[in-house]
Length: 177
Image (cartoon, rainbow, N blue to C red; front, top):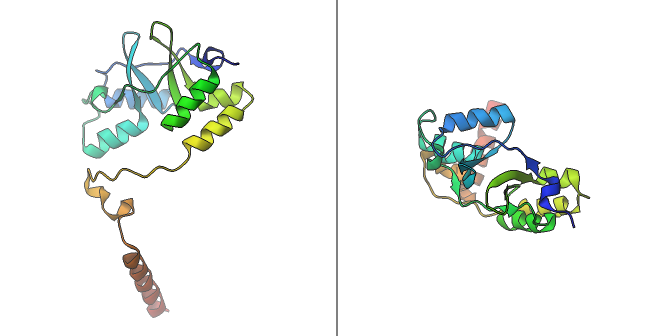
């Protein structure tokens, strides 16, 4: 049975909860990653993703150059331990529908990240395929209506309105011909 320590990525970059959204985004660009662990010392306190920055920060009008990561980060992230089996970690990914897990040592300090790509590249791939299948199952989207953009773009228009709009477009095209 393969352990997480054998396939994880070590030496990952982490950020402080006091770092800004802009600094996190710049680090993500530089490292070509979409998630960065957030630590106080070696202790993991959350993760910040490119989606957190976009949806919880930019979409809400928070200034990227002065907003601390703590305001948008995901706290209490799902984690695994370096001595867990890859199968156990893959099950956690499936249950939480995530592609990356911070990896902790026995003292609960951050020691790496386990990505679905690590599992695919460094194991037989069966766990990765099964995990990806479970992660990729569509979930019902949250429609919190937090911004002006949450109108019909989120699928809120009814079918009759869509059909009527389609009819109007066809009529307009016919008139133009």
